Amino acid sequence: MSYEAIPLPNKVQLDPTESLFASRQFLDFMKRRHSVRDYSKRPVSEEIIKNAIATAGRAPSGANQQPWHFAAIKDQHMKSEIRDAAEQEEEAFYAGGGGDAWIRALEPIGTGVSKPHLTNAPWLIVVFAQRYGFDQQGKKYKHYYVSESVGIATGMLVTALHHAGLVCLTHTPNPMKFLNQLCERPINEKPLMIIPVGYPAQTATIPKAASLKKPLSDILSIF
Image (tube, rainbow, N blue to C red):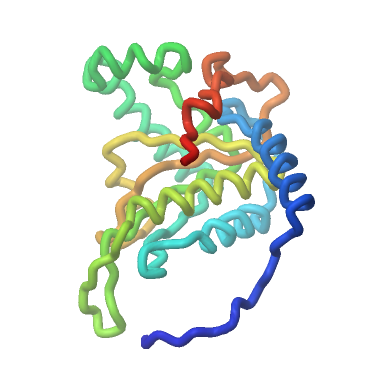
């Protein structure tokens, strides 16, 4: 496909006052986002999940190659298989495979071997990164900035889920190669994370440590 310029199709810019107000309002809204492990049994519409993933698919990517795929799972048997495999990996991790420093770093978060959120959440979204692609003739070609692109798309997914009034968690057991076969995905895709999605349980909690965010002065430099 050759380069062709087209006029900017959508203009959503605000005047300076409206822009400042919108930025403050959105910041306040995102301050209410939390990673949650306790899920309600309340069902979540498939259309909401589709819309959130479609939002993620609008993310910028290296050379516009969009090197991602999202597998949305509500089948209880599949979720049980994922939980069983994840807990086996967690057993090895907490038995010493993760190293003392890593395990100590997780203590304030309160994580452990048991992962009930993987079966309790009404949906799991498995995020796959396409390490390379294939053209129409089946010839392999390189993808660029895959990790960066998929990271941006996942951030937009998490934000879209929060915007829809849902909660989620980014779960990253490793290795996760079994997910390719389970989700019927090709070998050029690498599973990066599993995102449980749903409504929070009435008794949902979060770790106190997770509410402590770095101040703006620690994460921003202005020149």
